[in-house]
Image (tube, rainbow, N blue to C red; front, side, top):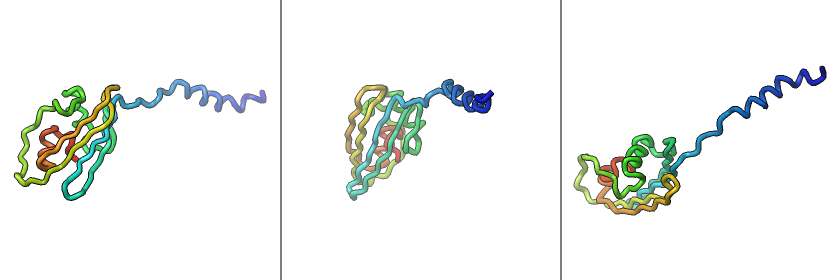
Length: 123
């Protein structure tokens, strides 16, 4: 009966083997916007499950899923933007379901970057 005091501890340790490991994201992207003023904004985006520091990761992942991870093939959304020319360079690097992703484009302003990518660069 010396080991009976260890039974609850052993049960806890053995019970941990039934705990599922955390799900790793299927896709991980680093997105950045570089403005002509010198300001640089950058966020991370993970999908499946959605997460990262992107303010609307669920919507951004849904948009990317519709384009199979190809940012250049995202259907732009209708959105009113000012006609102020303040170019931004948008870039994305990472993986989409195991495939490498590299994207770079220049948009007339941050609003245009947001609209043309249906929110992927909306940060």
